[in-house]
Length: 88
Image (cartoon, rainbow, N blue to C red; front, side, top):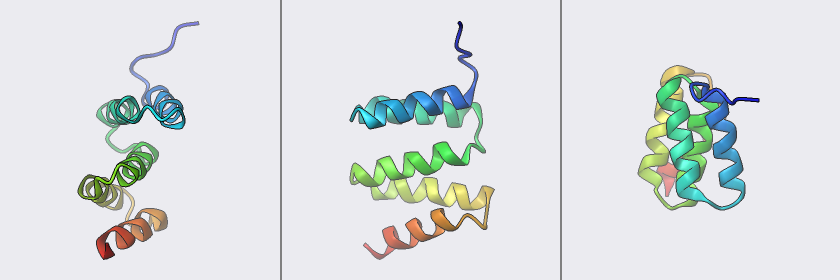
């Protein structure tokens, strides 16, 4: 079985697997690949923002959250996380 390298969801899944194994840089790379393929991939942006927050890169996290809110202004999770980051 071949895996489609042009599928944002495939890169998203790989990123989740890397993140769970604490391979942060590999996870970041795959989240970014998913976003490059599908800039409106809200889940990839959300998990990337969580990864950045865990890494202490709050400005990068906030940037991804702002992108999510441009795509989906009603995304409650992104809005709440952005508000928490902005308070820090």
